[in-house]
Image (cartoon, rainbow, N blue to C red):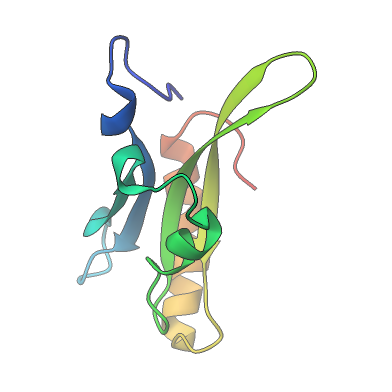
Length: 113
């Protein structure tokens, strides 16, 4: 999956996008207003806490997180797929998200765990 578009401004780049199952349970949609752009992050901010704060306490979600890191050889960029299933979520919702994960992973290129 392509992580960035050619010529894209770094601050306009999405860092996190959340997805949810639609109200009718038939499709996976973007959770509007639940995204983080690079420009939204401060250099001294704890990114992990900021990401976790985007997830609802009692509802399931999927997310894609754009991560950049360095190895001894080079800089790397990867998309990390997150399945958020809190203990407080309804059992029906947990089952729906577990069974829907395959449909979402089939739409994305790469390996999802």
